[in-house]
Image (tube, rainbow, N blue to C red):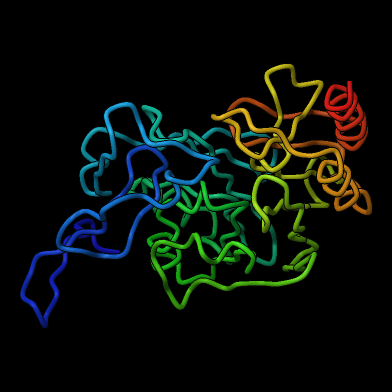
Length: 283
């Protein structure tokens, strides 16, 4: 990937940019002018900033941001952009004999990040929980020549198309080395979590994004239609989310934000968190 993302429409001879929404971090298809709006931020689950719709580019982001790499356990590294940008989620590099997986994604991709990942064997795939973390996924896919797995139910939220995007359907999608993508729904119709049986010392881990949100009291998780706008999910939808992960064995849950993870007893944490959530909905 070239460090400069500026390009040209050869038919119109106009300079174009891959504009990025500052509020959600989503990269859009190339255009000569910023898009009229960010469809992701105009949705009820997100918001437009107090100063109105603002745009940047990855080139500009590289000037004063960098990625930090934080070891979480053997074979699992959290990647965060510093200072925090847009929603502020973390991505995960999950190393595996059959090929490494990047779980969720960041807008910033720079030479340091590329070098770090290549030193650990590169990538075999990118998989993303939901549209708020699509970010600059096409840049990552092009750099490492890998597919990006997205649930087809969320295809309407893709702002930059690419042949690298692989839309899967149904309730689960097995990858290599026992990795499984699970459509949990809830926050988005195609909301996805990743099960990794080899993590947590072989006890299994769930990488949940904020489909199942690890909260500040890390003995619990929660579930929302919109986190910034405080729109809850129904009891029926919460029960369905719990049912989707019930067949899988896992002890640890890695959430979207650092340093939020449930270290142990993850499945029971989800069960009792759902019970508490539904109890308060029905009071």
